[in-house]
Length: 161
Image 1 (cartoon, rainbow, N blue to C red):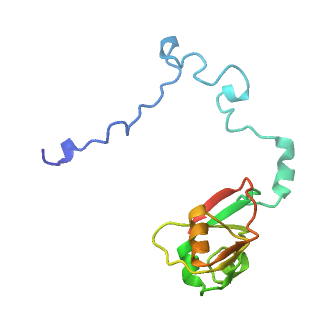
Image 2 (tube, one colour):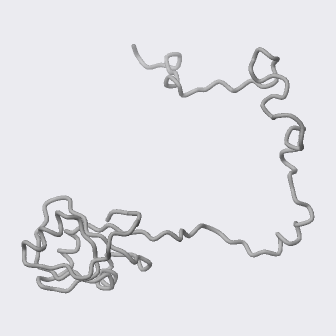
Image 3 (cartoon, helix red, strand yellow):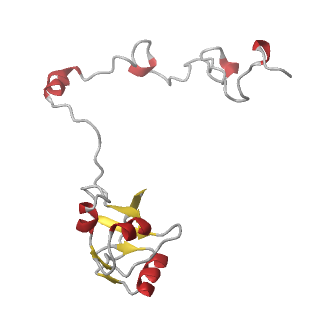
């Protein structure tokens, strides 16, 4: 069938019928129309004007704080191949070195090396950085070493780079 104006229709399930409130007991949303019973929120116009009027001046006096900063400690995942490209053989790699090379954001504290893809492995001396088992074995097999990697803590992984 050719595509023309009378054959165009939205996908199945894309258009949802509006919930019809206050249409009698049989509708399932009659009497109180889904607003519960009594109270300021049940009245017409009540939902919009819920304000603590005595606090208005105090609220206006506060500075506007925007955004959200999490207090949880996160591990930043970085691919081992990026580290291998950035450093020469037998180099010492720390979190500060990764930041200096521009591989990490400034606020990162914990880092974890992850694999993925074919990587040329160099014998690097990695200090204070965690790694997956496969990456750890590959670097140690090439003659590198891991020193003082942080212990397993309940840390949450974030971005992958």
